[in-house]
Length: 476
Picture 1 (spheres, rainbow, N blue to C red):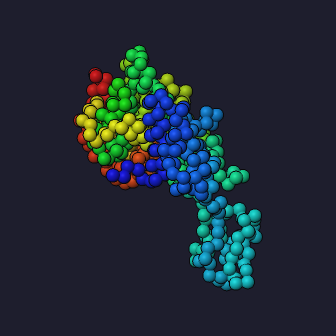
Picture 2 (cartoon, rainbow, N blue to C red):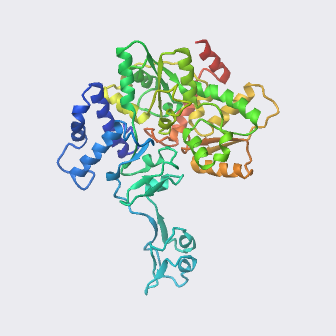
Picture 3 (cartoon, helix red, strand yellow):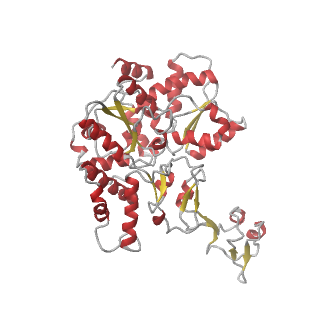
């Protein structure tokens, strides 16, 4: 069964798997060269122009799997040597140009960048072109196309440009660490740093020192992943890795839903705080709206805080689909509660580094979150949960007008309207990834079927009311 969407993901996984394998054996340092040989075993290139370049790129991937450049605070990094096969991009005249007589493209260009040859074909002078796109809009044959690099096209916050060597360059002042560029780059030249070594060391420490226990907090989007096994078997696999216990992040979502419902009705207007990429986007691009961001911690941080309140010696590892969580857990208000973060991609590599066949394991059961806590994983789920929270709190006279935003472009539109007081709504549910968390860059697979898996799992909850799930958790 195919576990990943793309071969790029599979390559990333193989590097992570070998790094984790040798880390468990305490032989990582002496096997760094061997990892490259395992990934690139032959003497002929299979992916690049020469074997030496392939090996050099894999060596850079190994560095990222070991935590990346510590001086670069962003969790998203570019492997410069791997980023050299995409055209620079911009507007180009294609063969669809018919050499017509109207020459609307030439007339539309305000910079004189378009010239017409003796065959009446249009040409664009790149030194004069300012990428306004007016020529493309007026061409009756759609013969002028804007060729953007996949990473540029994926980055909706315009954080990616090209450096002097034609490699992708990330503007950290704009980047929200959503990982869209990571998933879309067909060369795997952009990657998220991995903290899997930190997590392995934390687990090893708990095995050698009984002074603390390590808890795994799993995102509700896990129900849409690892579909070759049952969810209970996936949880058993996590236990096999050495975790003391596993807790649903959806229980944190239950707490947030009730609290956010109260905060919204008291303030009258609110934007959600669950998606760290969305929160970062608001702060960077719409700072005037920052005061309206919910003061609730995210579900991840909320349940981690609860775990550490109950067990002062606990360490908490979040496992989910989100690269932005790797930035969030370092925030001052979250760092005391979450010790590290790994993605589902990294979890799969970790399983295989220890030869754990999760589909052969018995099912492990954990405490139930509510239906509403679990649907936080997909678009509109948070809005539905807040509506339920208002209902369960018995708040009357408040008309919830939720604006669920499916992806950062939809977020931008809603936030722009909010700044101009033109938004027909009082609660913005911001999800940076299309589809919600089930579309996160750290997922094994993406697609509409993920929503079906999450909804199916959510309906299996023992609790149809949020308060019942929270009460049961508190009594445990």
